[in-house]
Image 1 (spheres, helix red, strand yellow):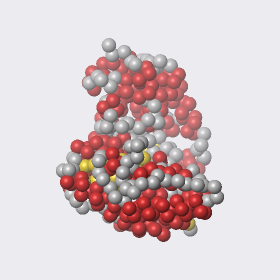
Image 2 (tube, rainbow, N blue to C red; image 1 turned 180 degrees about the vertical axis):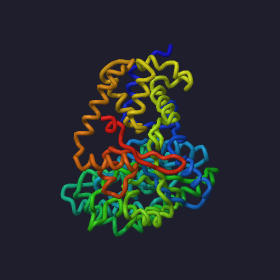
Image 3 (cartoon, rainbow, N blue to C red; image 1 turned 180 degrees about the horizontal axis):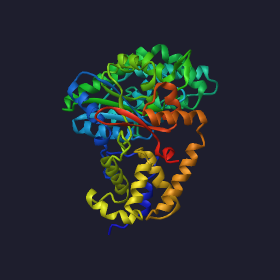
Image 4 (cartoon, one colour; image 1 turned 90 degrees about the vertical axis):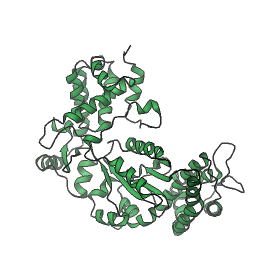
Amino acid sequence: MNQVNLGQLFRACNPTYTLDLSKESDRRYYIDFTAVRGNNIIRELQRTIVLSGDEATCQLFTGHIGCGKSTELSELKTKLEQDGFHVVYFRSSQDLDPADVDISDILLAIARQVSHSLEEAGIRLQPNRFQELLQDTVNLLNSDVTGLNLKIPKGGNWGVKTDKGKSILSLGIAEITTKARNSNTIRTFLRQHLEPRVNNILEALNQELIIPAQQQLKAANQAGLVVIVDDLDRIDNKTRSGETSQPEYLFVERGEQLKRLQCHLVYTIPLVLNFSNEKENLVNRFGVDPKLLPMVRVQERDGSICEQGLALLRQMILARAFPLVESEQRLNLISELFDSPQTLDRLCTISGGHVRNLLVLCYKCLQIEDPPITRQLLEKVITQRRTELTRAITPDEWELLKKVKDQQAVNGEEEYQTLLKSLFVFEYWDDVGGWFVINPLLDNG
């Protein structure tokens, strides 16, 4: 009756898939790791929004690559919708090139996603100034870029839906941003036109989209509007001008503009900003500390196993195989998935509590053989992953890793770039604070 459905398990362990917790089928896979993350970050974000009422808020959310940020933001969206908010969640990587981003790009992406979501919810908009802005932009691009012939939908009321079910405003913005994302030339001309008009864009966003939407949502007994912009943490840490990096330029130098939208905002930001000399300027700009999502704690400060973290990671894997079985009953089914409970524990501990690493290792095993996964197969996959990881490490970096092992600390942007971005080192938190450990794939090598 509880035999493993191999196809379903294989798809559920795909490390590139992000859970959408609005879907019941995905919610069955969700494991709440709050107790072993150090703080209940999602509850803090939620409470800030709920308790602020009509006063707009802007919060920053960051974390390590692959630690589960998007899944937790999906949980935040679900909780806020239960609180009566209209939540616009989107992944900015759909609209932006992470290697080259400016404020106008982010604001256009927000305008497109918010207008489309509000229209879907039956909110009627009259974005006349946006219509003029976009039409001027199209005219300019067509005159400056040879052979572009950019066209956008026409209509007297840009809040009206087309026969494809999308608003003319969101389609118009999508037409422009898609062309810009795929062409450096178009992107350059677009910014030359829009960057001096950022304040006009902000005013039009507030006056024609956000404030009217807030009024209509309140009239329908909803709590208000929340916009969650994911994937901005993927922005490249390249130098933009002088010694200013792209993340510092966007969130420190231009942060005041990002927070001016008259609704509740949550932005993901690159983790490197937590190690930047501009960290305090960032906090002063936004008035809040970035909320950090660390790894799932699988070991304590003294190196001993964190039994609670290990138990939850077991459940994460077992839930992918047996989503309809209660958590306690799943433990009786380990033998259908692994040759022994010790093999499952080895998988969980070697992942270091990095949820994507956990799925990567399990997925690789399933690519090679059917369950039950044997210890021999798992060790083979671990060796392959360790080889891939160590190939990139220089002698100087090995010295840094020894320092982390001794001091449990990472300091400054240079060490971040070397150790954390490459997933050589993981960060854990408990009730006291945070500390760093070497990725177990390396520590066991």
